[in-house]
Image 1 (cartoon, rainbow, N blue to C red):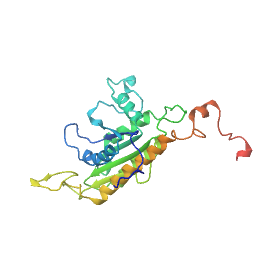
Image 2: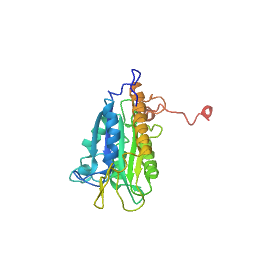
Image 3: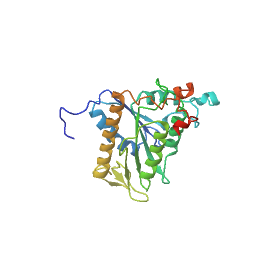
Image 4: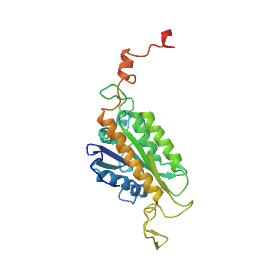
Length: 248
């Protein structure tokens, strides 16, 4: 990307990448390899970036903000949620298993959903004013299918989705090397698998900048106006009068 004095300033933005691999650290995550491409672009633009590998934390399933209040012994979700809440951008990374997003990605979405009834200072749902995207990797069909489900869930919870908000890499059907692999069946692979894919690199770059542009616009204007979408005003009685024939 060419640099010039007209480039937007993204330095006040924060982004959280949540890797929903099934592998605990320090095991190699191929999904993380592609997420790192987007992450490095953001860091080059001065964005504050954090990566969370969700499987490393003790997070029970459930749709309540804190599952210890539902009988679970521990729940790391409330602390992770605080990081996500502070971020302007959320990118969910997931591998493909049986054509679907990982079980960890589904757990993340369910726990995000647990907080979706909370409100921001305008009385809007808490994820309003934030941008969301996703990165998918796998050795079988399903990149667009997984992205479709993740992005639908994010927008339903209140995240804003920019154009082309997903990116992915997919290998040949069946067993084979995954994104970033440098060896397969004892044979060296150079360059690493996938890193020279123009389609993947282009989509990852466009996704990253589309998220940055949208997040900056939302931040600069203070999120969405509260006119017509405030849960607080709805509950207080300041709502559309459905019983008035004039509005029908």
